[in-house]
Amino acid sequence: MYCHHCQRGFAEDAIYCSQCGKKLLQHNITKEQKVGIWPDETIELINLDDTEHDSSIDQLSIHANDAVINKVKSAKSSFAIKVTIVFLLVVVSISGALFRYYKIELDNNEKVLELQSDAKLSALTGNYQEAIAYLDEAISIRPQFNPLQQDQNLVYVAVKIERIATELEEIIERGDESEAEKKLDEFRQELNGYKEPIFDNQREKLEELNMKYTILSLTNELTTLGSISELGNLLNVVNGLIGEEAATLREQIIDRIRTTATAEVNALLNKKKFTAALTTTESALAWARADNTLLELKQKVKQEQTAYELAEEQRIQQAMEEAAAEDYINQTAAIELIEYEKVMNELGDIVVVAYMKNVATRSIYDVTIDYKIVDSAGTVISNGTTGVTPSYIGSGEGMSFSVTLPEGLDYEEEIAVTITNGSWSLE
Picture 1 (cartoon, rainbow, N blue to C red):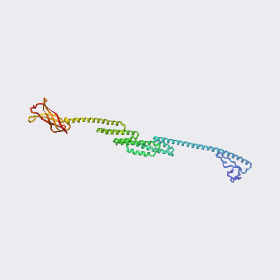
Picture 2 (cartoon, one colour):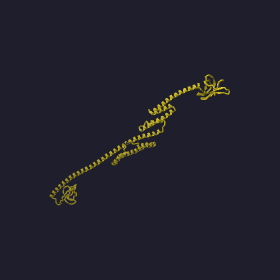
Picture 3 (cartoon, one colour):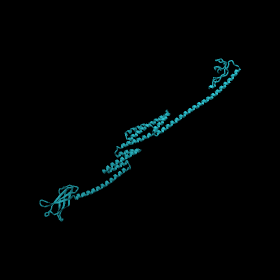
Picture 4 (cartoon, rainbow, N blue to C red):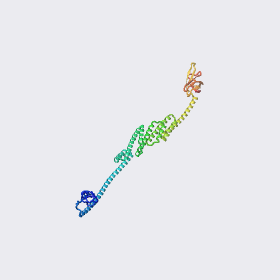
């Protein structure tokens, strides 16, 4: 309780204020009843004379007490309403602010997730720069969101690997096998350990470029091979590969097998080695089955073999016939009369000298001939058997004999000399 004059607190049983000495009114007035919560709610207090203590004062005190109580009640009611309104306004304001903040954050989250999704889609399709742009924008919104940085790091790795793949492809196109091998190893090492879908395209590219490198290596090897068996073994390797480059290389190897087989077969045909030529075509066809060029080459070998065998048979037959004719000549007609002449010796006798030739293919010796000499009327002037000189006559060489005609013949008489028979030994 408080003094109405000095507002000093006093004990419940006190009659005068211990501070100002005024007589105390006997009703409770709390400190909160002096001034209200708002400035216009100040309560006007009544000054009381400390000598007035009659019933009128008591009555006034009662009225004043009621007024104070009514004022307090009214102030409390107004205060509660205003506090409630203020509280509701604060709640609404805070709720609105929180809702707006939540909405902004939710929109940001959706935007970030959308950008991240777009970045992943771009990266999966190989548009890495576009993916990086999306992720940069998302990171600017959520810089502390670690998955964005992780995704961006993966995209940068993909960009690096793509650059290596581009360089490797250019090296392969140049045909630099050793440099391509180094770059291919680098490609493998960079890609090793990454299983994310973003690298699916890179893995496919690695397989593609590995195939191209293999084709390059085999193509370079092709230039060093010369035999059909070596080419066939290389063809076996290429047959296990797929793709347009492999198909092209396969056709190149088959073409080399064709040209190699054709060259070898023609060389063998010139030497009439038909069996070896057929073996070569069969070897080539074992690698390039049903190849039209090789089948035609095989047919050519067979035709030439047949023609050669027929010609050889005819040649042998002709040789046999020629040998028989030769033998006949050698046996029966080795001596051919070339010419003859008449001469008169120192004794005055007419001598006929006949010149002959060995037409046999072999040398002859121990030659004897039967001759006949007739005049113009066909009368035999002389005949007989005689030897020839020299005694040994090579093939194509000449020989002769001479006969003295009987006496009494006219030198001018026309005569004819014939050889009717002969004998000789063949070397």
